[in-house]
Image 1: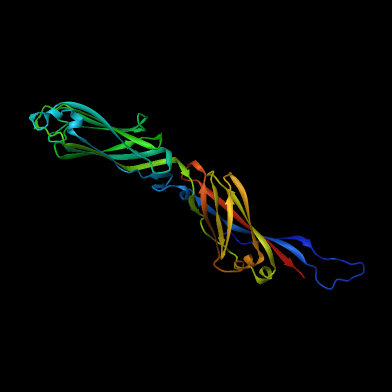
Image 2 (image 1 turned 180 degrees about the vertical axis):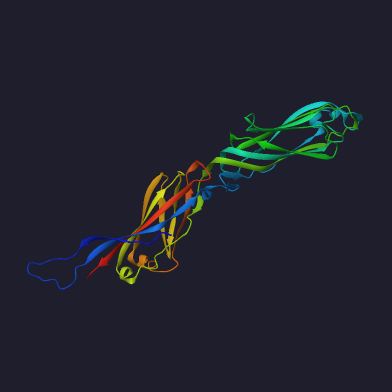
Length: 335
């Protein structure tokens, strides 16, 4: 907390002199008292959509699991073999699944990440036996740049599940991740073909850290961090003579969003509007009675809340809006 200090500045005198009149009362003089207030802030957390949080020097994004189920008939194109006990047919197949980033996130720059890939073989034979493989590839959008890949080989017996963790590489991505699954099955085992048997692929993002994100900010509720005001020591010699005042907000705004809402000091609440400019100054006027309601009082806080709008903006985890507040008071001296 900054030490409270006040700078009195004489504004004007009100002494009127007649030709031969001698004043019988002390002159009335107005002074300005400038009282700095600790700064308050609006952190980048206030502008983030759901499922995006600050994690150290990165944002952490939550992405819903990807999952798809493919039946044997679709994979092998072998409907004519259904119900027959025969050699399993060889086949190669490819399919895709996708999942979007959290709502209102249109793009991001990945720092690191990992995805757990589960392959559940509900088919009556080992589809990888004899040198088969199943490759999972993650791309930025359909047909986009590859950001991760892993391959399953060896054995995948019937009614078993295999799991691998895939690393996600650093990359700039759009709003949707695509997973492509390529499977090559040599076949040849003797089995009863059931074309309704299923192969299930599930991809669960276990970590996705991004250094920046483009988010859509429209009617987002925000709050200023509350600040305790050290105004208890302002005595009656000042408060009894208050005429009016202004709180001046010097704003440094790295977000490029505008905010409209209310500033709350003690029992008073005043509307304000902050522009999307990188720096701006906002003035909020108070009557003498409004000032008396909190100056000289204990336990007074300065806080605020509002609604932010700015459309699509790019944010980083360390960004913060700072609001430096100053009370500019006019008091009456004399009279």
